[in-house]
Length: 251
Image (cartoon, rainbow, N blue to C red; front, side, top):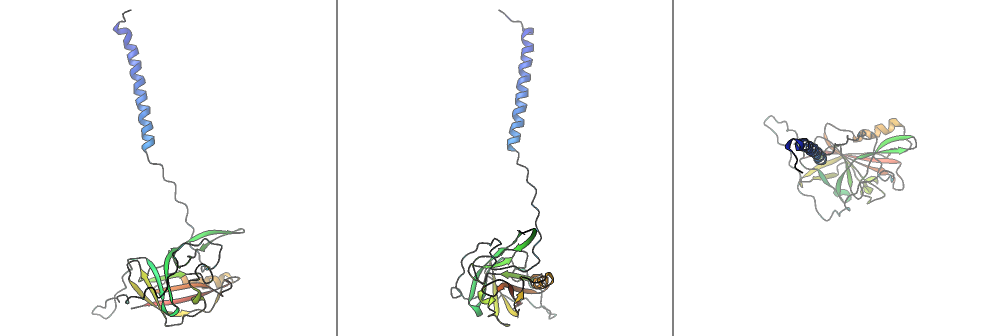
């Protein structure tokens, strides 16, 4: 049988329409595969704790860190370069540190330990939700929102005194005295010198009033000078009190 051209034409249009629809669907499918997934919204960030950290408390998750090294392994290098003094006699502001802190050395108590950054976490205790500072294992933990060595501000370091390396045990035993030197190193190997200006008596934390705890926590607040603040627990067999050591930056 012979088909005429006008009989084939409707069928050809139908085939072309089907092919066009199939091509459009394929393009849409490919676009869906290649498009990047939508980014989920950032989780809300809780405010940092307004009380002192609790080194030695097993309840918060601790940040892992390298094993404590011996003070005899590496002797402190030369002092950090002091700020220049212009013709007017007033010293220039200390330039900001370019590297993150990675080492704490205190010769008076034979301490030479790594520094790692620690943050805070939300903890539920009964019906209450609070934020608590984490504490590094086998290292000094630098609060992530505190200053870096050499910067104007407060470099806050906490450490365990009776567990997980006992890095700050001799600090807890109040072996540091006013005038002792504290050396902080940054990732570039530069050393920054701090001299102890205050060693507190044991500060009651467990069972203390909220006003007392906030007064204790004033030691870890930002400052207008360049200082380092060391925080640990006391006494050795428990964690009811805190010992705080403050050192001011020197040339």
